[in-house]
Image: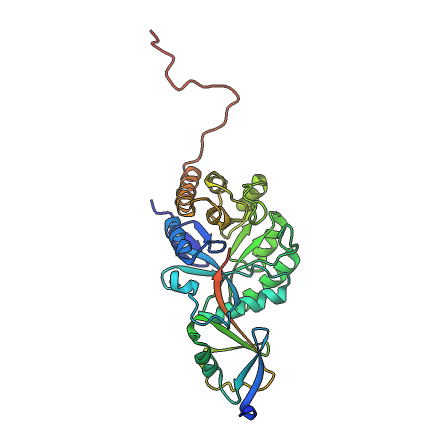
Amino acid sequence: MEDVFTIANKNFNSRLIVGTGKYKSFEETANAVKASGADIVTVAVRRVNILEKNQPLLMDYLDPKSITYLPNTAGCYSSEEALRTLRLAREMGGWRMVKLEVLGDKKTLYPNMIETIKSTEILVKEGFDVMVYCTDDPIMTKKLEDVGACAIMPLGAPIGSGIGIQNKTNIALIKEQSSVPVIVDAGVGTASDATIAMELGCDGVLLNTAIAEAKNPVLMAEAMKHAVIAGRKAFKAVRMKKRQYASASSPQRNLI
Amino acid sequence: MNNLNVAKIQLNGNPYEINDGINLNELLNMLKIQKNKVAIEVNGEIVEKNKYTNLILNKNDKVEIVKFIGGG
């Protein structure tokens, strides 16, 4: 049975979105992305280094024609910075689907939801499809949906922490009440964390550091691919009921 | 010698000298940058790619050229 992942009317096969930061080289980035099977990669917008002419570019290793680039606003601490970044990203080549993150604090990289909601509203009016990194507060995510976010992306734990989904109850609650895709963004450390996000019913997982900082990033990318598929299938299969006591798996009748 | 023809601009936050009267396309050629891989802001305004040739750079212009890099 087909299980298509749809964001802003666009269909994707993989429910895993991967970041492209923190890799040792562009070759490693490309190999890890390929192993992950992701159809969407997040990218950041930064100044060109004028002094180093003919430097290789990310685009030379990951072709934006064959994989969907999702420009982000990482490092932006105000609505103005985030809007400027995404307008530039769109000009670069027509990127309409973007990842908005407006940060509130350097230590936790927690989102500033007031600026985030304000920015989402403006970007939606300007015709962007806005996927939004946000807190795991169901009231805030509802507001985001109200102002037109095309995907809600609550953090499982702080960015780059790798400590896994800390807030299962909230993530499940947000998924239950949202009519747009819910993607766990940030906090995943290893394969089982991604599976848990998917078992909670989330539509996808976005991660970067868990792959990039693994000792073998390409192997971890492959693990994440399978973890997301496993979690999704388990969710769709609907798990068994939990019991307090044992229930024998072999029949009790006709024992010798 | 021919300093009359040089104009100072701010390029990605640093002072940069260009030949006076060149357009944005010529600046990119000088920097060996492919225009389909960047976006440009001049004095805080985004410049559409089809307007690069028409945009003549002036003294003290603030030019920002950005690209995509790896990010999460």
